[in-house]
Amino acid sequence: MEKNLVYEKLNRCYESMKNKLPFKPQVALILGSGLGNYAERFQEEGVIDYREIEGFPVSTVPGHKGRFIFAHVEGTPVVMMQGRVHYYEGYPMSDVVLPVRLMRKMGAKVLFLTNAAGGVNFDFAPGDFMLIRDQIASFVPSPLLGPNVEEWGARFPDMSHIYDEDLQEIIRSSASQMGLKLQEGVYLQLTGPAYESPAEIRMCRALGADAVGMSTACEAVAANHMGYKICGISCISNLASGMTQQPLSHKEVQETADRMAVQFEELVTRSIGKMKE
Ligand code: HPA
Image (cartoon, rainbow, N blue to C red):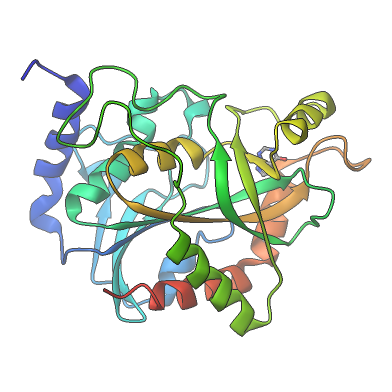
């Protein structure tokens, strides 16, 4: 095979950490805003700091931890990512999705994505949760650009069912058991790091988006290419630009996400409990 730097980098990362794996995870969980302390609820069976992994992208956002935590959640073996890197930090897209690919090499079959997002749909309110049914990734570069790695997936992968129907049903049933209202919709990823202008949000709405954010969709594209089953939940931390008089701030996003953390955690835990093989 021709030399492929992205492929080789992933293999180097895997080689440098595989001896530290405590078990083979079934679910890979990416902890977005509001779930930063999620991992602390569980008896951890292994921790790997991103810095211990050769070439692994480390977040530049202040206060963001960066580590893999291994634990059983309601009996399901899970690898959790405490801290993810974003495209706006300046990493190439291949680095942004490297962790997702690495967790697939660890053995994960399900990718559970979480994030905080701006509500674009007028029926949404801050503090709502949105089950991601589909996505728009067209505004960020595809993580699949460049030579295709056949070992990972097809050159032209099908994207007609990125978010697995069975996993969606699991999340719906968990929300319903909790008596929690669950919105559903389409997540649109923009590069950030600036929040959008009101005109951009009208564009997002016209395109069919219900929520907007700066992560997740690119990870789902790389994951779908590799054959993961995927699910995702957004915590609607704010209504998007132009929908209220209030200017947007990271502080508001963080405060809402933190306020919703307990319910978000329970929704994720109950759902993962139903994802046992
Ligand atoms: N826009 C983009 N990303 C976000 C937002 C938003 O309004 N809220 C949380 N992440």
